[in-house]
Every structure is written in C-alpha cells, then in structure tokens.
Image (cartoon, rainbow, N blue to C red; front, top):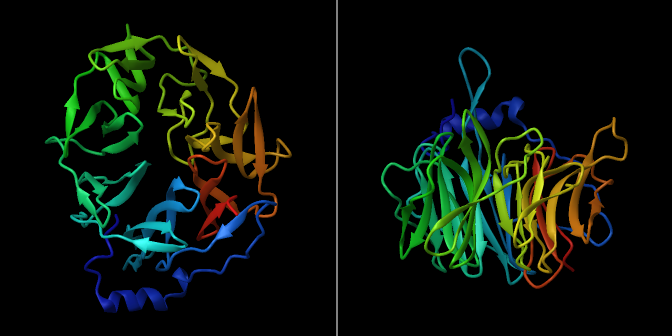
Length: 364
C-alpha cells in the first residue's frame, strides 16, 4: 500500500526524517568515460528518482521522475512508501526550469514523458489517467475518452497518438484538436505502442489472434485504412511492445517494453517493404531511441565477462554493428532512459547511482 505525500502531517514527516532507517547514504562519485560529463541536477527533495529524458536540442532537455518519497513506519513493523510528488524539469539556457502540472491527481505517479519539436506531454497513472500538454508556461490536462486507463502518449513527426489500457483492455487514441479520440483497429489485434512517422504514415505494434494462439503483429495506417503487415516469428516472445522512428526516418520495433527491466531479445527494422530481424546488442534494455544523426540508440549493460556483472552502457548503431560506450568507472550506475539531441550526435541520459539520480551527457 502506498499513499501520496500530499496530506502527510508535519509530525509524520518529522518521525520519518528522524528514523535512521530512511537515511540517504552519500554515494561515491565516479568519473564518466572520456567525452562524457555529469550535468548538475536541479534542486530535488530527498528520496528522488529520474526515469525519463527527452532532448529537444543539445542544450534543451526535459527530465521527469518523482521526489519526496516518504517511508511511514507501521505498527506491525516495516514501512509504507509514498509515491512522492511528480518531477518535471527543463534544462534550457543553462539553468533548470520548473512548470506547474495543472490538475495532477493526488494518488498517481508519472509514467511517461514524450516530446517532439515544441510539443511536450506528460502522463500519469495508475487509477486516474492523467495526460497534460505543455503550453509554454505550464502543463494543462488534455481531454480523454470516457473509461480509458493507463494512457501512454507518443508524439512524433506525424502527430500525437497514444495507447491506453492494460492487458486485454487496450485502445488506440489520436489527438484531434484539444482532445484524444478512440481509433478503430482491425479485429483481433492487441496493440502496445504507436508512432506517427507522418500524417498519413502511422505504425502500431503488438500481437494478434491466429487460431488458438497469438503472434506478433504490426499494422500500418495510410490516412484512410489500417493494413496488417507480416512480422517474423520472434524468439521467446509472441508480441512486439515498442516501435520508434529515428530522426533519419528509419523504423524499428522490439519485443522489449520501455522499462529498464525489459531486455531487447528481438529487434526488427522496416526496409520499406518488409520487417527484417537485426541482431540486437547484448545487454540492451528498455527504450529504443536515436541520436540526432539518425542512428538507433539503446541503453543497457555491457559484459566484459559473460559470467560476471554488467556495467552501464549505451549502444549506438553503426552500419551493421554496434558501438558500445561503456561506463567502467561507475559500476553502480544503471541507466533508466536515453535520448538524442536533434541535429547532433549528442546524447542525454538519466541514471541512478545507488539511491541518487544522475544526468549524464556527451555534450560539451
């Protein structure tokens, strides 16, 4: 059970701060690899996390997570941890900016951050779906169809779409004007992610029914109709969970979700006529993205010894192989998200070192 920090009394907060069990250790600082630096963080309350990053430019970066998570002692022992308060910060003109999240529900947690051009969206869940759009000064809620839950927004070069629901209760949404509307899909499809390459070029991936089994699926919308496109059989998976378009227009899909714990076992590339398998980097996890030059980028772990622990790494596609940027001097660091700055090869990442979030970049 978790409760939000809103409404927690000063007395309760004092109890938590006094309790030695929730003291935050000071992690050792480790130097990043050559060409990388650790960016200064914005002010955040103790017990904070950073889980999402979106780079609008080399010096224009959004991060999101939570802060102020509180451990509440229980009479029977142990603690209940609160969700904390949402964190959305923007690094621009050399300093961090904070913007209000209008209408934020009391019992919720940030689940996503999506940015393309001047459009920035944040989402929250679980029980009260929250989607808000940045208007230049604050985030304002966007209208959603009745009954949808767990909305995840994907804004891109062809507009803003979203997937909603969980398990078999799934829906695809499209932003029309100031509100999201449900989109009808081919029967028997259960979709997990969507990307708009262009106004009449939209892809969604997931799985579909095939007799008594389910198989991975991809559907394409040409502005008028949806078409199911064959997908190769996947190793150890019956579904695609993520699709993305790079800044150079390449389309990629994977069976990994956007969570740090999801390993990239299968990686597909759209050739213009078919989906083909590509060998993924060993240790790739979570979000597919690209740098500003159009190369696919995946964060994860690199393994010098196959039987030993991995160290934090960023993998960048180079022709038919992968460039590995390893962080051997900081073995405690684990990446949560990575994104590329448009027009450059610069990358921005959010990571955790022990209990402390860090922002790492290869920009000067």
